Length: 260
Image 1 (spheres, rainbow, N blue to C red):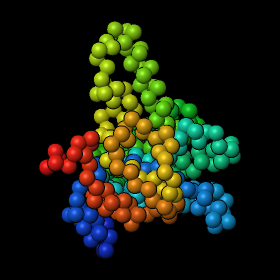
Image 2 (cartoon, rainbow, N blue to C red):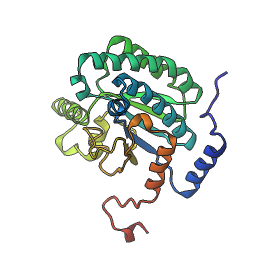
Image 3 (cartoon, rainbow, N blue to C red):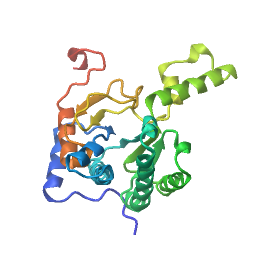
């Protein structure tokens, strides 16, 4: 039987979620830079694959909690364009892990009404990974709950270069004129077209950079840095990030008095 809606939270967790919903706005769109898998494993004397495997558990818990809270969009920086430069054996291992995770998790995502999307140069992924990815997208395309975006072989600069090329092509073809190029038009050429910009960016492992992620879209996002490595990140860390977000005043270039 296909269960519509996210699986309900249990016990104290449900109370924590209700408290969050009552204390302020839940971010419409959360973006996450999932950092620190390798360092988590190294501190425990484990191979890097152990960190990546445990990171899948963090993804599972974060996706489930976001669905329960009513978050509409969750974008996970799963594999950057620059990650292709890593040692070949690690890249191959990551691709196998991605393929297995998609295969194992798609049915549960579907039961929980999650719709899967992807952004990035997905044609550069191995064909078997592409097949699992597009199967997940196709299977969940009618779902109406959380929109889960997997950024795969993605970088913000790639996104902007791709948009500029397409604008140039359409200008040359006479479809648009230079005078028509506005912020709104550029957004229509990005891979995140029709998706609201992230309200909240979470980065794990304590690093203070955005690592070529959603460069255009993060212009006014609130940034939360978690000191824990991604394999340690669970819903309680997510709740802490949302509480911090709720305590902030988002001015978008204005002053406080204007917002009142």
